[in-house]
Each structure stands twice: as C-alpha cells, then as structure tokens.
Image (cartoon, rainbow, N blue to C red):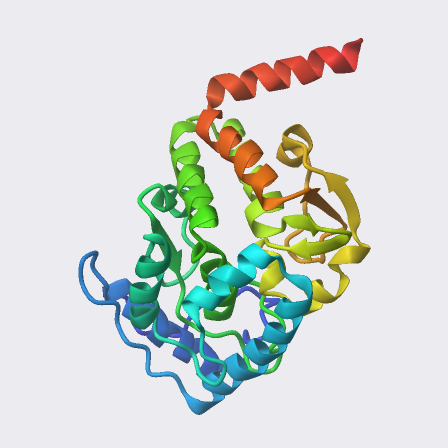
Length: 286
C-alpha cells in the first residue's frame, strides 16, 4: 500500500502550495495503490468541495457536448449516464462500462508509463485516476484527473465502435518494440482518440477525449488549422500538451475513421514504421 504522505506535485501545478490538497491527493492515490486486480474498486469518499468541482465542470461540459461533440460520443455518454451533481464512483461506472462496451476500469494512483497505459487497452481495461483537480481552477488540469478520465475517455469508450478502436490501439502498442515506432503510434493516438474531429454535414464536431473533457478547448477547437486525416502527418507532428492544439485532424465520418484508423492499428509494427520513415526520407531527397 502506498505511503499516505504529502503528494509531490510539479512546481507549476495549481495545488503545489496547498498542503491540504497534496495530502488529500496522497490519500486518494493510496486507495488505488492498495487495489489488486479482481478486487472491487476502492470507494473514494469525496468531499463536498470535490463534488462541487465535478458539478460545475460536468454541467458546463454537458451543454457544450450537445453543441460541439459528435453523435458517436453522445451515444456513449447516453449509455454511461453520468451524474451531474456528484463524482461517480469508479466501482459503479465499471459495471455500466462493461455492459455498454465490454471494457473494465483499473484505478491507478497517477500517471503510469505510456506502454503500460496503452497496453492495458488490449485487455479491454482502462486505467483511471480517482483524484480531483484543484478547486481554484475547476476548468483546468495539467494532468489527467477523474473528470478528464470519466467525462472524456469513458464517455467515448462506452461507444462500442470506439471501444474496439481502443482495444486495437492496445494491441498496436504491444507490437511496437522500438521506442521510435511506439512514439509514432502514440502521436496518431493523440491526434485521433484524444484530439480527433469529425465532419457531420457541414459542421465540425469533436470526438477525442481531450477535446471533450476541456470546456475551453471545446470553445475554440474550430479555430485550429483543420487538416484531413493523414497517418504520416499525425505520426510525425509535434504537439504541446500544455496549450490548446493549433493543428487538428478531421475525418469525413466515424465510418471512415473506423476503417482507416482501425486498419492502421491492426497492421502497424516496427517494420511498417521503418518502411514509412525510409520512404519519407527518400521522397525528401528527390
């Protein structure tokens, strides 16, 4: 079991100087640290202030979702039926998610290595934090918290189509043995399942979890440079996790995404990566 000490936070974290918040974070992290696979997910006894943060963000996001998120994302949200006035327990959501898409939840104390996180998706498992962002900035978090995980990722994974794409992504992660191929894969994941957009008629909608869980980014994502779906570009483009994304990629439909991204996840490995990189280098010298 984790030591319930004061949680270390980066110097730019909103709660870095709040000792009560850091201690609270450590308590909730300890719950996840004590969990063993197969056991019931520990209950986090949230405070009234923590529930208030959830309510403020969830209610604002719900309105934005109806206006700016894709129908496929909204279908998943309908299946999950998240409460608006309090933080749901992962234990309860676990049952709903299994029924909706066959995925299960595993609580984690905080960030986990990328290969661990992605690899778990192959087993239809999503690793989720349970702690809540600092109350001083309810609409911002520099790291994944329970609001980002649940409102963004779980609403998406509750849709069986996107659940399958996540499962395939997990298998891709496990096939990528080199760090370079895995980095390429993770960037494609970032620009699709985290920050992807889709055209519904003549209107651009968000489906990626990172967009769907950010009130601010849902406000401005249509102002980004919108590029058509392109695996090579997505896999080689740099991004900044601390700022609104200036470049996003779109697909003409969810069916298009399922076909193209699904094929990429099914086929990609180190050999394919090397072939693409060699081909790009050859083209650049012509």
